[in-house]
Length: 388
Image (cartoon, rainbow, N blue to C red; front, side):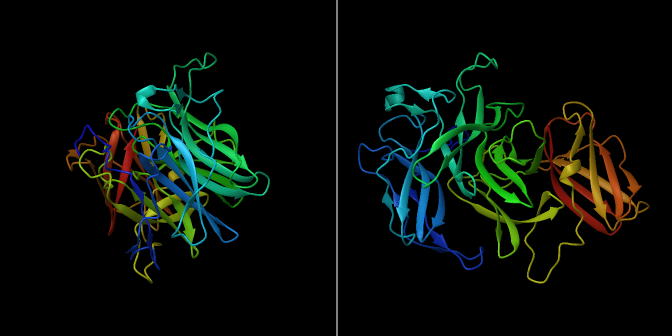
């Protein structure tokens, strides 16, 4: 693998299978799914699986790519079904769904040697819904739109489809739209890997965009546009989930500090961290040994990450619980390779009801990913900081 080539022909030829009693210790099993027969839509690559269970049956939605064609010839949403998670049968409907041609960008037949199809249709995430039956979220690219105006594939999206039976789907179109490329020139801005759930009456859509995982909160599972966007972590293709009363987040395919996919192997690595909720906002916390609490750790409130204008002078506000506003304070900033970044203005502490608010003006610091180290009194914290 080189810095210029992210995909290899030998990648994505099986969908793996492993089991664990505790999310930390895993046993590898035989692959769940291999390449399809010659001539099928998944004879070249199988990737991006998502599995749900209903009435003792398991449904695996995954992406198939044709053999003998260019890697970017098109993506096809496929389905396989199992009774035991070990033996899978491909569904006879192939592909199982596709975005509507009225809005989605498509390749013509013969493009890069392929049969044609959606430019992008992958990363399924499926949830039950009392009104819609089932909702399948996926990512796609938008075709040219004179009403926007925009060029073909200039915009990408998380889209949705609904189904009463998990096999027959009605496309609902984009539920969140972003530019395919953005200010983060060193990484990929196309929304990827949606993760959706409902918590306390609100719907959360997480996706990987640019340098990490972002999220939007909505009261409608089919509309996440025109709402405030929050940055969660520099993780990739994350799943956020509740297991045995605790919340977790995963990251895969690269080392956490390799934001640009420049030095770690995309075919390796799976990471796990905890999620702690501050009201309706999640924060990522390290996994703690049994019996150890996170209550004494300083935390960044995602409600107050960077404001008001991330393109110019930026003010970072930190909510610090149990900290005196009179405590001595030292702050350091470093980039992802460890080089220290000078901070021209001192940090200001303001007393609050539960502790203090620390305010740091990130003026004149280029956009990018940094490590923020904060030492206040006897407490210290290191957080990943994203300036846009």
